[in-house]
Length: 317
Image (cartoon, rainbow, N blue to C red; front, top):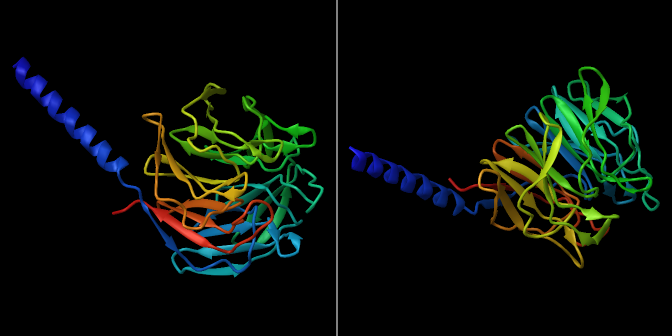
């Protein structure tokens, strides 16, 4: 009987390992879609309903208030009511079908961090000002968890911020939570199984000072922990969770924009290289829709370059 049980155990152990190997060998594939109406960089993007909203950034004439929406099911674009003010490097998220734009910078050259919070109603195509974020900053990351918006890190009036402030749209109130252990800007994040993973970024807005950090926030404990580091240190990238993996795509570094597409497996605390981004870019809008990662706009060279490229990643069938 013992031999039978051991045999069954070994069989299922081998089977599960083989399934993991099969899954990890899927490097995925990319497809090019209809370009955005305007060329931009340092945009922010989010999904609301069946549409992808792309806001702000740098356009042809500097910082812009443009808002454009993409319908993946139609592969088509249209323009919407602009932001109440021109902004770049904003944070963004969707709660209850409404889009929230948080912080960012106002000026093209002398970047001025703001604490403004704007709410967009897709049904009315209107913007409304909401309670300001306590700490003004841009180049932050925003993660949506349990109906609340976590505004984390960024670049403030006095340099890098470790501020972690949470907005609850149901009450209109902000709450301060445990500080990010490593204050930084141009970072990215993703939510997986009730925790926030905050990846990469840079110090003092310098892509010469890119980081490989992977820090995890547990909202139940209001505590941070460290995990396996990002294989390719970078900043200004896109991120999204697909197939129980957190993908980190593109970004900016010394002398180049990145094509690297690396996936973090939270269960095994390991990283995997995936099919590279076809068009190297940073300052992109990246969102997950229907289990695909859409990468929109961004600069193809370090600094102020712009594009309207739209590419989508999915794991192979």
